[in-house]
Amino acid sequence: MGAMLGMDVRMVGPASLRNSPDVLKEARRIAESTGARITVTEDVAEGVAGVDFVYTDVWVSMGEPKEIWDERIGLLRPYQVTMDVLKATGNPRVKFLHCLPAFHDSGTTVGAEILARTGMTALEVTTRSSSRPTPSSSTRPRTGCTPSRPSSSPPSATEPRPPLKEAPMRVVVALGGNALLRRGDRPDAAVQLANVRTAVAALAPLAHRHEVVITHGNGPQVGLLALQSAADHTLTSPYPFDVLGAETQGMIGYWLLQSLQNALPGRQICALLNQTLVSAADPAFAEPTKFVGPVYDEETAERLAAERGWTVRRDGDHWRRVVPSPDPQRVVETRLIRLLLNSGAVAVCAGGGGVPVVRDEAGRLTGVEAVVDKDLTAALLAEALDADALLLLTDVPAVVRGYGTPDAEPIRYTTPGRLRAEEFPAGSMGPKVEAVCRFVELTGGMAAIGALQDAAALLDGAAGTVVTPGGRPFDGADDRPQDRS
Image (tube, rainbow, N blue to C red):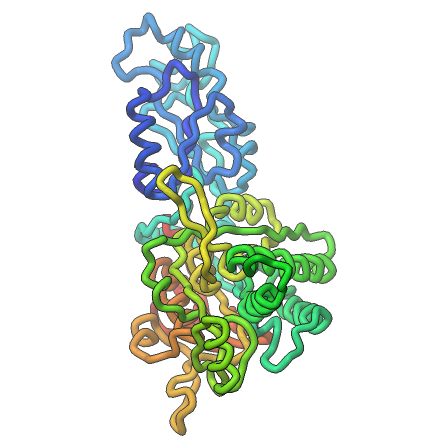
């Protein structure tokens, strides 16, 4: 089942009690198509590191004769769930599940018999572990053994939900490439670093109050590197876009990493290089829509298109190059990002939507010539990390209905359904709208699109375009994103 759901499943126990080789072979075959990960190990520390759920099956009393209980208990004793095992997960929000009956004290007839036979007051789990309280600060579902996709289970009616302003949220923030290199700016390193510092000044208050993951765009930057590579006559051929995307992740990630460290002294910050899985059959490869590089007037754009085989399209009042932008399927390193977040670190990741890769029939990853939309990747990542909110920060204050017409007006509060009914350009605002709609529809959380300097106000629902299931900001306990496990 875990393989079918695309989970990261760890099977920890003695080799003599493992599933048959045929079962494991079939699980791994399924995992190749779903993105699941199957780990079989006798090492408890390896098996539980970073998981969201620890589950133990019943050791005895499932029809085995009592004559073999001593042998079975001896085999499984090293795998008893204790507080040390739960701490070894490194996840303060880890949940414990067990099959029934699980003997965790000697208060039953069988429990007393086990105590007399083995001297153990518990089998599968110790009393302290089984009665461990669930941390009250968690507002996110955990779907089992470090999942790559969350559950869509209905809300719990009894789960306490503190007011928004009193409880930390898990927030994924996507910085637009144009917020880091504004239209008309020279693409000098000093200019971009200054813009990064401005961005971090707006993000630091969020990071003080909440768990924050930061992704960023790279359209202007990857376009610039593509121009440089195409003009380099020492190269046999220009660098492919997956490589250029990785370069921009390192460059922008370094600037964000250093600026965040300076703004948040004592806080652990990490910048990760990430791959994003896409489908080789995605129709986007035949219909480029993603803007990259600088802006041009129409004449210059058409000349460059003819000379270099580019596809160009109008972007507002200017023209820009467009490249394929396949739909993201999964951030390959999601589990590592979750580990960082659970440790209290701020993670900078999935820059430029992640380096686009496809998986071949043997399960190997290979880069492809494309640029993944960073907003769609941010929505995918926010869902996988069980985020409460998704913020898309750009160089405009809000989504505008009727943009460029006399009837233009900003959209303040809306639902996914109403927002999808509007029309937006496919290469600019369109992906942002699609990203926030997907996130809200799948999670019931809130998402917002707006200006970088309004980051904190966006989260409070006081600025930008706020998208929620009910079309209003989360303003109290009744609207608070809750545990959906």
